[in-house]
Image (cartoon, rainbow, N blue to C red):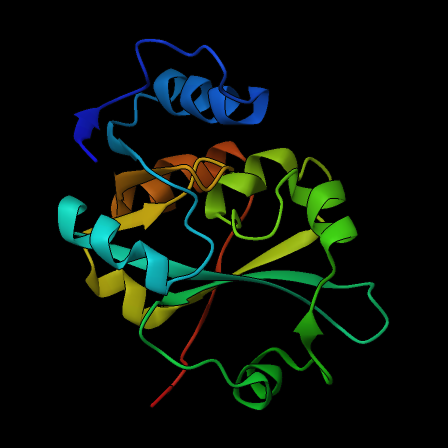
Length: 180
């Protein structure tokens, strides 16, 4: 596993949705470092990637209300435990649960294990509300997948908040999760 600057020199065999992430980041002038690796399905699998990048991989959770009418992408520190009750009270939504794979693909064009803030570029109708745990704001860089879990990106937190999110028309809502 090697850390390189920017997009892959050879894009052969890469998915279109991954290439679209690089295209968007490049068009916005956002610099990033990238590492290719074996599929990283869990936050635990990302620990070696974190060490290589010197960053903090986010835990990205795709959630919905009981009626499956409201959808949320929660970014939180990978080492925090998620408690639905704690978040539900802050966003006034009862019975939060993990959204199913069908909604994930429909709304964000991503599959389980690849959930990432980058998926918001595919949410053209703004059906997904971005929730960010305030503790992530203390990290100068965030790690995320480019809509596929065989690569990881290291991007300045400020670039995600001030350039990427406005470009994809998503405004974050900040939450404070205590975890344990």
